[in-house]
Image 1: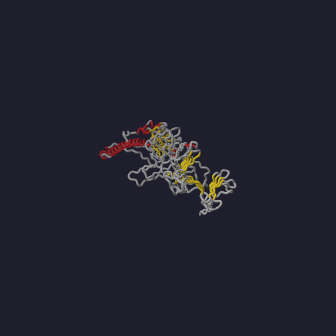
Image 2: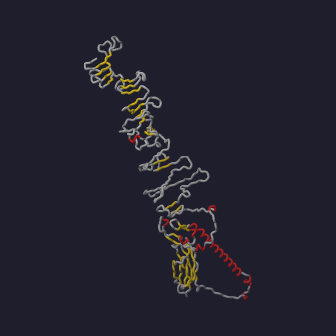
Image 3: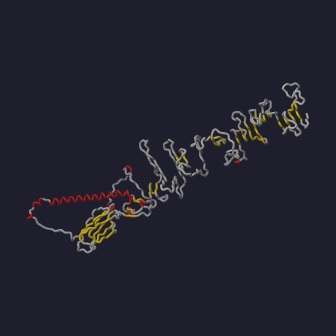
Length: 573
C-alpha cells in the first residue's frame, strides 16, 4: 500500500472485535514494515513519515523492548526464541540495562569470523576442551586466547627467530590503563608451549620474593645466558647494609657479596671459583682481593676456622689450606714470579714465636751419623752486611750471617739454589754441624782436663812422698832460687772471655825493649786496631767492644818487630 511519501508499508489489521489487539477494528491498523524510495527497509512498528528507516535494513522496536535479528533453520537449530544466531541490543532504560549490543550464538557451536572468505578468528563452543576459547588465525585454540602469527609478522612468524613476534602488540600502555585485580601481584610470562600465563609473585612491596611477606620459589633450575654481555648490580650508596647482594642471608646482607651457607650437608662449599683460562703473559687468577681504601687499617683477606667443640676424635681446623701439588705461597714479592722453588717463599722478615721441624724417624731414610765437623766449622767466615733491597723494617740496618757461595764450598748440603739462580742457606741445617764441632771441642776439653788432673795428682804425690818427709836437712841438697818476671815479656788471656761489652788484657814489657804493640784482628787476619804500648813494665789494657760484632777475634803482642804471643777472645751477645 502506498503512503503519502511513496512508502511501501505493511500494515497488520486484526479482525474486528479481536480481544487484546489495540489495532483491531481500526481503520488504519498496525504498521510492521515499510520500504522507502531509497530502497531502505524498516522492520518494526515505530516508523513514520518523519522517522524513516536509516539503513538498508533497519530493525526498530517500540519503547524499551529488546530488539534482535534471529537467524535459524528449523531442521538444524530449531526456531524457538533460544535457537540459532541472534544479533541485537538489550532492552530496558539506557542508563541501566538498555542499549547494549549483543551477538549471541545460542547453539553450542563455533562462531567464526571471515574476511575474503578466509577464517581469521573463531570463538569455540562450550564443549569439553574448548570452553569458549578464542583463536586468531587458528580454528583450534589451545588456551583462552591463541594467536598464530603469520609470515608477514615481525620475526617471520617463527618463535625461534631472535626478536620474533608472538602476534601481540601493545600500544600506549600506562599505569592509568584500567586493570582487573588478580589474586596477588604477578607477572605475565610465556611457558615452553608459547602460552601467556599469569605467574603469581610476592604480595610484598620489595623486589623479589625472599624479603617480602609472600614467596614464590623456583620450581626448577634457571640460568641467565649472558651472550657476551654483562650482568651488573648497580649502586654504591653509603652504609654497610646498602646495595649489597645476599645469598642465603636475611634481607640485610652485610657485604657487597654476603654468602651464608647452612645446607646441613657435610663437605659443602660456601664459594667455589674455578678459572680454566689458558696461560699467557699475565697470570690466571682465581680470586683477587685489593683494598684501595685510604684508611690506615687494611685487611685484604680475613680467614677464620673457629674452634669446633662438638667434634669427636681429631679436629681439623685450618683457616687456609693449600693441598699437595696445589701451588706455592709467596709473600712480599713485587709481582708474581716464576722463580718460586719452595712451598712458602717470603721476601721480607717473618716474625715467628716458634719453629717446629718434623724429625720423626718414620719420615726419613738413609740415616747416617754426621762426622766430626769442627774443621768445616773453622773454615766458615762470619760476616756482617746490609741488604740491597729493604722490604720492611726488619731488613733494615746491619745483619750478621754467612755468604752462601762461601758456605757452598765448605758445606754444600745446606745451600739451595732457586730457579732464578739465587743461592740460599738453610740455617737450621747448620745446627747439626755446629753441634758436632762443639762435641768435638768438648772431647778435647775433657781430655785436657783428664791430663791436668793426672798431672796434678802426680805432682801432689811427689811432693808428699815419705822419702821427702824423712830425709834430714843434712842429707838434702839445698838450693835457693829467686824468680822474677820483670825482664820477661808476658801477654795474659783476657778476662772475662767470652765477653759482651768489656774485657781486660794484662801484659809485661821490660824496660830494655824499645817498641811494643798489641794488634787486634779478625780470625781471617784482617787488622781491626793496633795499640802502641808507650809505658814499659807491667800494664793493663781495658777493651770496650759495644759496636763489635759477635764472633772470634785474636790479639797479638809484637815487641821490636817480633811476634811474641797471640791469644783468642770471643765476643758474645
